[in-house]
Image (tube, rainbow, N blue to C red; front, side, top):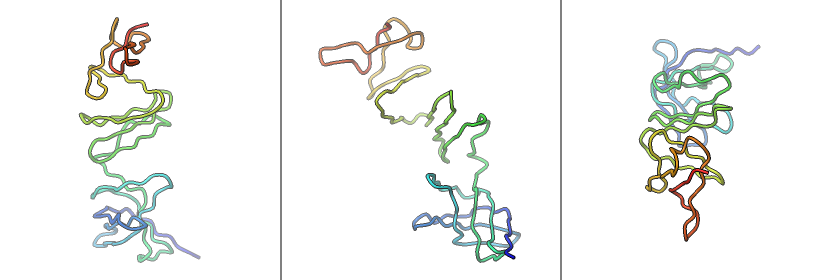
Length: 164
């Protein structure tokens, strides 16, 4: 019969250079691990900061067969995520929130956002710009109706919109 031993771990370092991400961390009092595989689901990768906590699992109860699961840092974890929502974030404040009917929100503080697509809608609380040019809304504030780009000799404007 195989045994599995679960315990809480604290991450002390990560080696993210090889084919598999490896972590160092603490287990039981006085116990330290090095080169433990960090297990993540397909399609997502991250580099948890030092001090993150998670679950250590010792396969067959062998302390030489430890892997780390579910590492999370209490200072950076996003809180109050609505049911069914998802958040991707890092330790510097970049956050992307996937909120179902409320859409996708990206927040990088004062740093510029780069987005591309066939159709983009920009909603700014105070001021918006494209390529450093301020967006101007003619006939309103950009939130009170439907707006279309103003036509110029060289095509539709990327920074001036008129209310329809």
